[in-house]
Image (tube, rainbow, N blue to C red; front, top):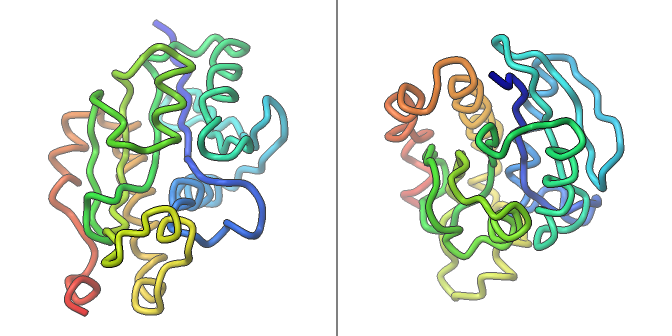
Length: 197
C-alpha cells in the first residue's frame, strides 16, 4: 500500500495575494507546517515540504503557478514522488459557504473553483478529498474582485481561529480518515457573531 500523500493548499503566489480570501488554502497549509516545525523548499513550480504525519509521508504543497494552473505542479510532484491521485487532499476557499464554516468532501465537481478545475484537468481525476473553507459570497456579485480582496475587519478578528479549525480538520482527516473527519467537522464553524454583522 502506498503511504505517500499529497496535501495541496490552493492560492496565488506573492505578497500581493498573501492575505486574500483566495489564499486561505495556503494559510491552512502554513499552519500545519508551523505546528510540525517544517520548512519549505522550492521545486516543481511549488513551495513544498515533507512531513511524517500519523504514519503517512505527507507532501504539503503550495503551487506557485497562480491558481488556474495549480494542477501542473500537483501532477509533477505526484509523478516524481510516486504519489497516487487517490491519496490527494486539496484545501481551498469556497464561495457557497458562509465565512467560518468548513466542509470535508470526497469527489464531485469543482464548483467553479479554478484551482480545483486545474487539478481535475491535469490529473484526469476528480475523486480526491477536499477541505473546503467558507469565505461567503459578495453582495455586489463581483466574484473575482471579492476572492482577490482581503478579509474584512470583522473576519480578520476570527481568521486565525478559522485557520486553526481548518488545520485541525486536515490533521483529523490524515489521522482518522474521511468519514470520521466529516462527522467531526462538517457541521462545525467558528463563532456565530461573524455572520451576523
